[in-house]
Image (cartoon, rainbow, N blue to C red; front, side):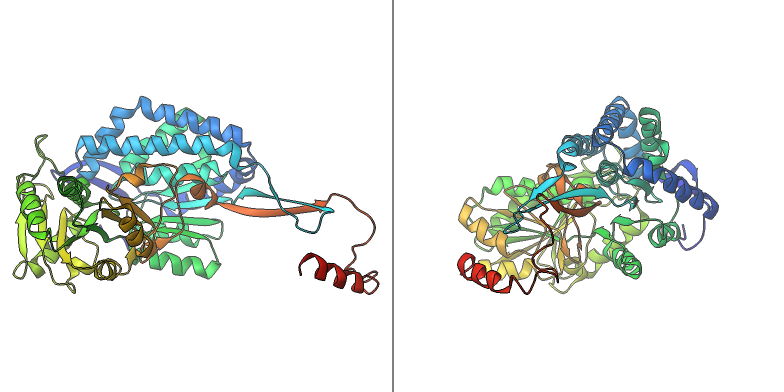
Length: 492
């Protein structure tokens, strides 16, 4: 599909078979304006809704999702090409985040007292307030999990939401919206628009939308940041990654091997925090490669339920992977598993040993079942390599030495660190998530995720009111010497 044109419909194909699934009508410019109008009408009502009511609404939503659990698994698997177990894990993460958000709502929206310092006649506090209308643009690789986390955090904060899902995976959102409408009775609080980048641009540039949350590529994220800057509009950007995994010589080698394979290959490597670069201590490099190469050759990608890995979701994604491998295949050691299906967008699980540091494979996000392996001698060297590409989403460190892990972790320019594990930190719903550098800015998940969709308003009032303040014109000269003596006594 050419995203620069206005399509009349989104045609969805199953990437593992290339078979047509369903067509969804695209949102027309006129329909978009109606959605905006509906959101504006609902804005004051939902912005001023009681936190307890928002909690009850989200609880109904969560329970309704669980009732349709099998339906979600089927549709996620069909339109992404991922394995059913991976779709189940995605749904698990989604409802885990939803339930955690529910638990935070009541306490977060109470007023928080602040220290007034020496102004003892005053009383001060802060409160979180919704921004108004939140525009959310979600990706195709986790069409439920990466949609629902931002949507429920925005709704929990008291915002009305307009969501544009990826044009490649609109069916999961269609089901999600159906479940929301049937379970909550708040149809206009959460609205959906369907289309390509042109529609996303309309959402970003709408004067009626108060905040944008985008999850996707760094290239598009930069465009959105530029557009939001024109309006000084707040924006949350969760962008690409090129996550390093650092394996020290004292690690549990078998755990590191298994973690590297799952962290790099799950969802066919189409995870923003996939393990893409492995740096292994040169003293254990040979044995590590021996172990991981044997295991990767046993992995299969295909449609069959016996296969370990599903398909690449988009044709462009598959072509990018192939191009990156073609540029290094004559200069690197390559070990591959099997892709046993010729119809779909399958790529064999692949390990690349010692690719050139300047290659696209090492500098650009691959987003496929491909992991590179390089060696290092010192901690200083591996930190420099890990920080060299500009992405800063996540990283993992494998070592039995807690002190060494802490030293390395402090110097990695990333938003999150997993120690002796991979990817699991994303599943901890209360742990803030987001990146630095080319991986974006802002945080989702936990209290920080809800706060990202809020304005923090400060309040002050008088505890005691005894005439004019001593710094006002009527008194300032009279109290000058008294204030001088107080400052010397109290702060000196």
